[in-house]
Length: 308
Image 1 (tube, helix red, strand yellow):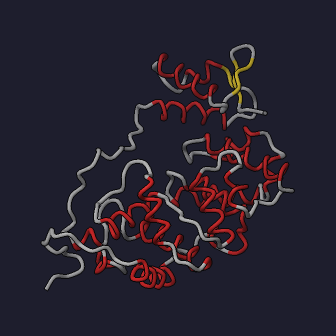
Image 2: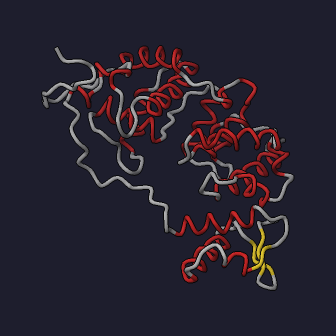
Image 3: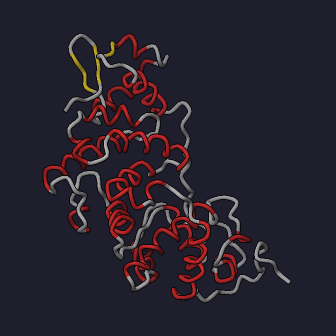
């Protein structure tokens, strides 16, 4: 007898599970195993959900949690952040990585304050019109904060759908029209259930149906998973993108920003030069930070976090 952990050996085509066959088991699993995260609590509100979505992009929960708590304690409403210089958002972002997200979140806070009386809008179109808000974030905020019915496609959800519904190990590198159609087809009709489904399928990908070492023995839909039932065929698409960091311009940018975050006064060129020996790469990284609006150059070869 084949256990859930051991995939069947057959490679015959497998009929995809129907949406209704997936909803019940995944939602029941989520009710038992969902993590108690601060942005899932009622008191987080729409602003707390939005902050979490910006921070969680390409960053694990364990690194986000302390920064999130500090951020909301300092800026409990969008207007509080909008009143500060954008450089303060970059400073508070700390070592979360991809610091342009901090500038985008600051710009979104300014727009919310100016256009929506300081309240994160409920309307999906208005969310999408905010600076720094793309397809995923607008859907996530509308769904998680306001309980609306939208397909929410992050990396974890796309991986669950790829395996369970289409029988492949990994989704494409970029979201496709076919994935969007599938996500819409899998959405429960009821708004409240659809919002729970979005959170539950994301949690399943984060905790069980992970990119490596998936735990089929704990998966509530293992017996319906097209990839497992097909014998877990290996990925045969384009190579998956790696996350190299050491020695890259990203590492140099991080070191330069760390010096600027730790100083309340403008920093000299000499202080920045001390953090990386290779001058060409260091100069390229600094120029990139200036071009991205993360650093402001001043007279006398000095630099600071942006004030405007």
